Image 1 (cartoon, helix red, strand yellow):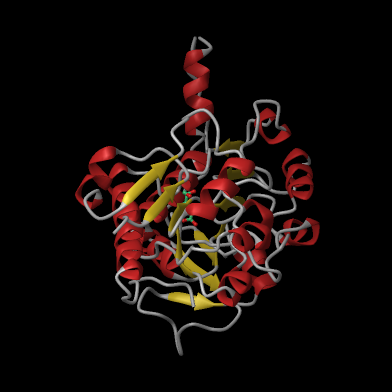
Image 2: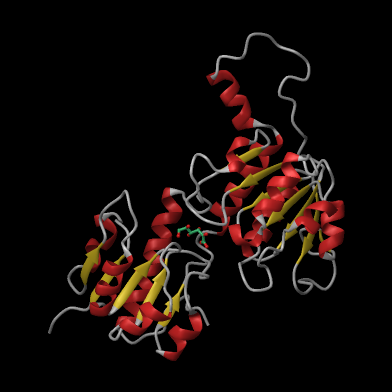
Length: 321
Ligand code: 8YV
């Protein structure tokens, strides 16, 4: 009997797939410098029993309609806004994601971005690189304190809670906003539920951890930035599309808010000429929230575990319902 075919849309380490080779025929896009072209992906998917795909692969109706053998698409991400879940359901294709395994790593990065932005770490490093460190003065590269400030977490899910735990260690006051209140009273973390506008009004650090949905599309718009303190720092580690980037740019340029730390953008990848990169009060990262070696390996292993379960007719661990 021929082995089931699994198509992997990026190069992943051989040692991760090695243990599965006896039972699975893996095919993989191997070019590091470009994502798999759409026409090739469509061809591959037509042959495949399973797909290991990335956030930047559009798994839409057209693609799913060509996937006549496909039983599972395992997305290497906790988010799945790149996938047409309804179309997959209609074709009885199981979709899985990678929750939990990336929670702490993504929260680490969120906090790193917050610290880097508040304490102007990237700007300070560039200062030395440009050989500008000739003298010392009391307010040279003076940033903003993090400890004992107020953090406002928009989207108190698993990653939001992990950020709150870190904030607690810094003695911060923690506010959060969700569609619905998450805890009956104040949480164990001491996080207080507030309305969106109240959070914007009170927080020194506004951290976006919301998934991208119709409701969160451009949630952080001109009106949202106008409600933030002029000393506020905005951090986004969720999705670029929850922000109206033109409004953010304007708010940063006009000092309506103090600074921003961004791991995600409306259209990724961004180029060197992106206007946000021209500003000193912005730290930009190339969507590396979950990018630690340990976590990327755990995410890949979870994807393969889900794929093998489905091929064996079992329930995958982390199906998107
Ligand atoms: C992705 C992410 O995993 O999990 C998510 O939703 O945004 C990231 O952690 C990463 O971009 C790889 O697709």
